[in-house]
Image 1 (cartoon, rainbow, N blue to C red):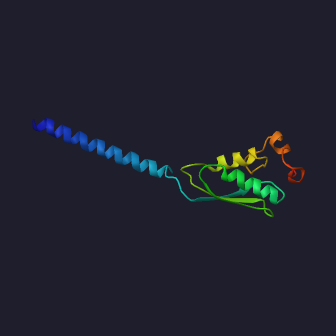
Image 2: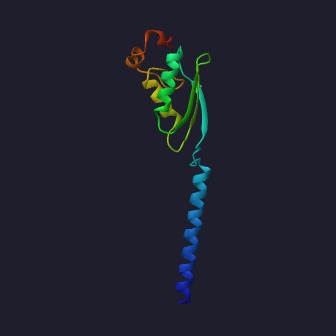
Image 3: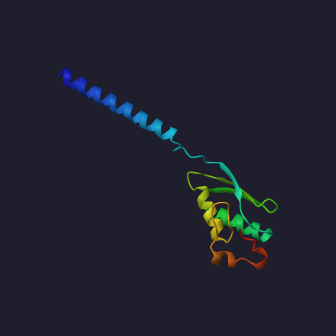
Length: 123
């Protein structure tokens, strides 16, 4: 009886220790997501019409809290909830609206849908 009780207690301690190690490993591996992560990246465009389109495309992604595109520097600054979206999802939405980013490129079809004054010089 003593050996059975001791075995059950030892098994319980072993499982508790393993669960704590797994939780610690998840935190160390970067599994914790930031609810207010700020990113800035380049988005090609020309004018205020582009600015509205780029910001609207960014906001179309669930989890985007703020999006501001600077016409002069072509830099988009976003604040996102990383538990709901990724920066790549935001860049893909912007590319779908016709604007190239530093990491994604709009299809020729999406780019050609832009108003002629919004068609920037592509690299």
